[in-house]
Image 1 (cartoon, rainbow, N blue to C red):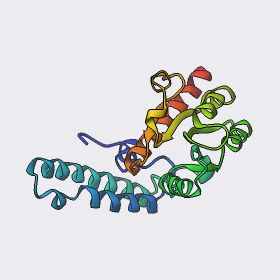
Image 2: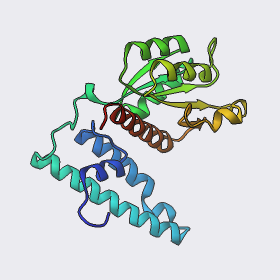
Image 3: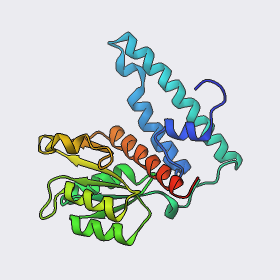
Image 4: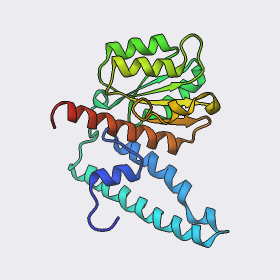
Length: 214
């Protein structure tokens, strides 16, 4: 990070959001060091150099954030837990829902629904859902139909489809960015999932700002 880093830049580099705590920061740092440690890439000098540079940025971001928490320039939790952006995960597989909550709960308030109807009820009752992440194949209403209804009842919410059956999604649906923000294929890695949801939250914030005239 050239120049003086900002808190937002450091949080983003560590994969954290504004609801992060020092413990979240330590866990994220530990995970990233394991992923980017140059010794894992000893077989490839080019990748080793890239990893060395990234690890330096990670170290600097971690030190910067921890120092600001220590000095009181950041509160112990930048936002209260209830103020974290809400992410609605809809899937009929309880294990999938558990995994999504584990991956996302450090930065988001994860709300779960086991079918499309329950997901719609959440959206209707909670206008502040930032992102809906829905499986494609579910009993009754499928994920595409759910997200089309979500576009009506909660138009600012960012819509993401998670599927192991990409071939079942028509080209017209896949390319319709007014309807779908992204399609993620199962299995989806933690980094890709977290980054896609983070981007989805930013889209939701931008829509809200435009609606408010900001």
